[in-house]
Image (tube, rainbow, N blue to C red; front, side, top):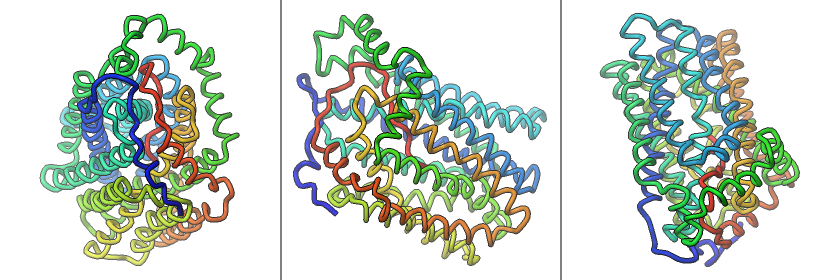
Amino acid sequence: MNDHGTDATSFVQPATGPRRRIPLIALFAAQLFSLGGNAIALVAIPIIVLQQTGSPLAAGVAGIFATVPLVIGGALGGVLVDRFGYRASSIAADVASGVTVLAIPLLDAAGLLSFGALLALVFLGGLLDAPGDTAKTVLMPDLAALARTPLARAAGAQSAVQRTATMVGAGVAGALVALAGPMTALVADAAGFAVSALLVALLVPRPGALRAGAHAAAVDAEDGSAEATRAEETAGSSVQAFVAGIRFIMRTPLARGVVLLVTLTNAIDAAGLTVLKPVYASQVLGDPATLGFMVGCFAAGALTGSALFGAIGHRASGRTMFAACFVLAGAPPYAAMALGAPAELLFPVLAFSGLAAGAINPMISTALYGVVPDGMRARVFGALTAGVAASMPVGAILAGVLVEALGPTPVLAGAAVLYAVLGASPLVLRSFDGLSGAARAAASVAPEPAREEHAAPAGSAR
């Protein structure tokens, strides 16, 4: 582990202009509402499916329809954000998600919500999630520059916001499911997306205004220079831009290692979120609403972990810490459920694992900002989003099939062992040798504020 010293607190600041904190705060608030809405859906949708069908396999099928859009959105998201701008993409994604989520309780109230209609709406609702999350995530370095905030600290704060959103959203979902049912929870979900869209529309600067923080003379040249830069950055076509991102990942050992590790662990996470945890809450603990508090406990621990990383953890964010956090984030909860842990024991285990998980996303974000050039962000992180999401549908359906055939206990035990093995892999894989160095580079280099409203790193590994 390495001490980063003063580099870890270097300010990312614009060349000229006043310090502007409101746009960064507005971005974090928008993420709080939009990701809080996602957390509500994460709890409510599996419960609705299990209530309608009683089948773990059906929950796995719903998991496919929830995760395949992440792959599609990840593959196209970076390019779309390049072309339309991350501010516009964020707003459009929130509006689309809100409309599709609200359609579920409206159709149910009208007696028109079939299982097929539910799957279609879940698919449509998730289609723009990846581009929307990507757009919000990549806004952070540029708005951090306007706020003159250290990049590593801003990454930790952003992850803390993400974890807070999950904690609050899951808790709200659990309470609403217990008091009024999962359909009411989805109405609150739609409201969160509406608030997020308004925050970005009203308080996050447009491209020319954002560039003015460092280059006031370039404001009037927005249309011409932005289009020229956009044409250059997208490498001539959407396909070429996406392929360029894949090529960059493949020839960059650290990015390649991160993609492989997160892709494999995301398959287990998708199985847990869409099948294993909902089935455990419903069938073992006997209360579907418990799922919300399970997710909330993990998120509460992750929030604490993110805050600790932002304050002190970035000084020791080497591969040993990275591997330890991965192992502790995944293996203990599945092991506890495999042993039939009651809620009063499972909740603390989830909180402890969340504490470890809270440091993972800011470590990944900070390291990748150090190896990905500014002009490559959207392409690289769009491809990365598609890569890490590609295994999620497989994990969801495989969990449904295995639980249907074997029951939850052996599947939970297998998930615990596999997560432990994968989480420890950075200790032996050479591609993770550059983890600490990349993090130092991201902390010590002060990138220019955004010249265009189109660049986007992937969302966090969820």
